[in-house]
Image 1 (cartoon, one colour):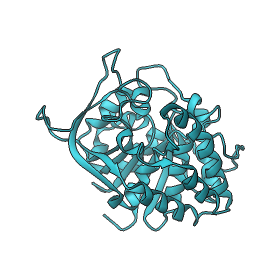
Image 2 (cartoon, one colour):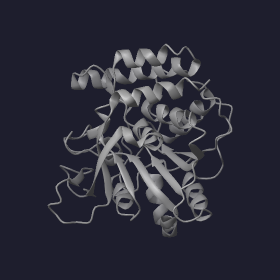
Image 3 (cartoon, helix red, strand yellow):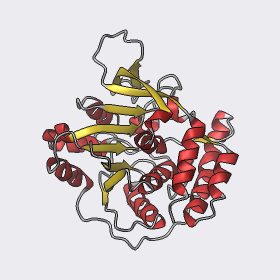
Length: 315
């Protein structure tokens, strides 16, 4: 792999997606953001694509290309999370109509076209949202698979339990059929599930340290996290909300912050009770072939040190 890793960031901003976007844009030496693709998830598509452009403008990177993708899951009605993220998705930040244009091409077509033009084993996909766009790309053009170096995604839950149902995490629950396609794609997958993201809590001192940077970006991140944290602090009785999606970018920048295990993960798509569950065979009892590097441990202080340092370099 070249020193500068080409990535496509697929997201549904969401305050935690917003921080993932900012962290990626703050790493121009390590990451080449080929495009940001938006999908419906935390809020509907109209707002996720707008929010992605707001973040690019806040970061001073209006040249980044943002594409709108799928407005609803493959087979199910859309389920959104305004109860967590607020009506705009990135409540707590400055909400405005961005000047930078939305690209005319559909996100799925952009993903397919970009991968088909690339060398084998060259591009990393970073989905921090329901996997509808990524699965749609595989279904539209299966020949993209060899072009993918790896998929580093936020989704799933095992030991921590689910955050939408007792066993299902939001991104997988919203489109389990898409998740099944992606987890079965045959390419290397790194999964940041709730098991690890619930370790990187945005405690008041960590959020304050970001705000104390004093930049416009830092002020917006502080505002978003203070809004975002209120839900999980009340729900879990912890001192800060988990910062899920930036774990993917932090892993690309500093993988030593995380520990994982190669396991088999299957996605439940039928059961009324457990639909969207990621069935993680942590101890190999099924003897199914491992298909995922399941991340289970994070260095939370190291994560926030990395995040704060990189955000200080934006704006």
